[in-house]
Image (tube, rainbow, N blue to C red; front, side, top):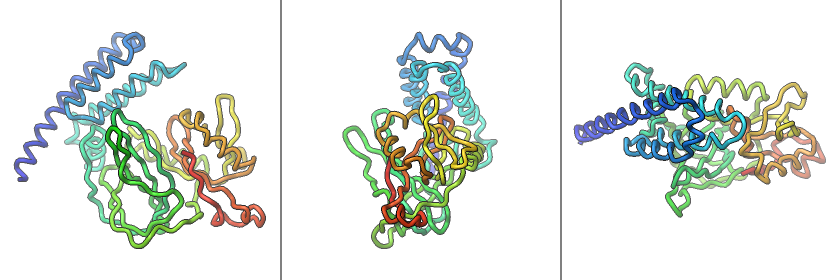
Length: 326
């Protein structure tokens, strides 16, 4: 019943609007009272606020609010990080309040960030999709699985996102390093790469050919361009070519072979054993690495390691092996 669906959508929008107003009051109180109050109040303040956002049917806001609770314990510089995240939440709140005045693609992004379900609505794209990476991330009581794909003919990068409840793994899984002849249907939101996997034509085929990579400078530029479409974007998928892992004062970084520029490895990746696998595979030489480039640095998810034949003959990267790093 379209009329009933419209009424349900209107009621949910009203609830979200109420949650947005309450969140704005809490952010205003925090800034006026000083950020030190966040450290004194502990995680409970943010968990309560997140629960209010869930009641308002805005799970996207709830997730971002929960992330605020961990910032005061994140080490030196936490007040700056907390203020940055509060500013992004304020931007999302005000964008929701003025959503009718936004361009349609950006309005779709705001709805997605608030937590409204986004349906796949673009034209299906058939391509040979290389599975770049797959990793699971806990989000409250559920687990989110992210699978990154790259289209050989279209040059598009796509994200398959699935969820699993308590005690259950997400249903969708694809082996890293294979190519699928399949159709993907993209979502409409601005700056979003999410898609739904459709018809598959044949069985997956293993391949070792990496996608065309970019330089460190190109990766930073790509993330900056993506932010102009989606200001709440934490990271952007990038394949780096000819980079070498080198130690830095605070951890590790991926430097251009020429040594002109480098990206710090994201803190989340520094504690993974796979980081040492990346270093060992490099042996001081350049590699092609896929990962997520964001304001916290570069999170490496896969690397193309030369095979024995590649090392002996100095063959092209087509002879490389895809090695997951997560």
